[in-house]
Length: 602
Image (cartoon, rainbow, N blue to C red; front, side, top):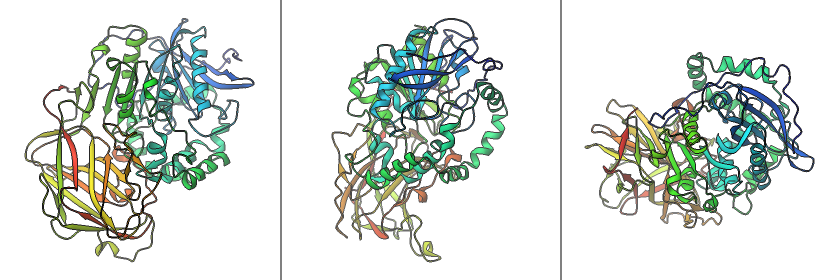
């Protein structure tokens, strides 16, 4: 089943340098590591036969000490060539191999069919054949002389999305997985945001990862190791903040790169044809079948991803078939770091507990731990949504003209309206347009007593437009006592696609059925009900909770330099005047936490 040669003479002349960066532990300190100090060596370009005449290329990093080790597998469509080099690339999300090998694990980084040195044809991402190949890779790894027969999974984004997919197949060697920033319903969590395609994200993603250069890239292990000693040195604390400030400009550069013809065809299919579940070129994803998963897992949510990688973590945690005491949810701080080296120590503590049987305290960890803005600490709960929480409804109310700062009241007020202009992204407007037309509505609640808001956020709006369709984007934020602003959460909906998909909804997400649009009747109000991304926060007296409503994501801008990843949408479709109708049917509902929790101050 393998076509593997021995390591090249130069492959291990210099050992790669490991990297730890970003959040590593969710508010606790584990007990002693099961293994440590074991070093790293690479078995490059191992070929794993998954079908007749088709083999996948993998780099296997193992401890320098001879032995049999549990395998940590990372599987994706990305090139494997830069994963150990530590370069700040968006596809560098498999973790740092020396971190895992030093702790007694083999780290296996695999590239799917059609990419790089892997055989087969390039195809649509996350397809069923890839899932079956992933299962074969797991069983292959378990049978290797460097593996003790136990396999776990680790990775972020694409490397995280693949984990629940393959866990549903229940490979015999799979003992558990640790997934970060993942999705479960690929149609609504990736392809469409609030009922509209995401061209900004897909153009960036494909231009960065699926160009001809990425497909033919080959970086010798020795060169990767040399680069890792530069990128993972202490100097990163100097160069990464400078690079992060320029990340938006860098992303625009990637968007101008020309992907392969196959990637361009997929882009066209997503933007032009994939408007319904039936016509979408992406696979459905594991949502709705998560009950097939039985192994223990940890799922981590980065609160900084506002229109990507949202809601899947909550779907998995709520609906997996894994016993309830064997699944954990972590909601981390809003961060954007490259490469993604976060959560490796948390994962290793989980794996030590799972496959080495280490008595390190993981079994006693609360099922839910969440980073709380405002107090900057981790708090814990027995479940999500928090069992001790209660709904808090706040009702938008007018303070006059649309451009004024309006208010959030605790009880519905008298009927009335405010309007805002919906202008398509990149549309032509006259100079000084914003001086005569407001393009967003802003509402504030002065905070009079300390309160924690942790859990699902639902926005219900009585809405009308003078067009047959539009787009509505909402965000919450916090204005500190000193006047500084911090974004908290975001959600969006296309008004013509407002029917709720109850079968796919979860306790955290109101799923929207966008397959059959219902055009608006100009001037006739409809009810829009949709979810915003959860962001735990403690509000203190003197602060203000803010709700903004507009029709374009770029008008409610946050970017990666602030720790948030947010992609522009090509919306709204028309110039329009949108109206918000006040009263009992227009409100934001948040979850106010009670006292039944404990804190982990870090």
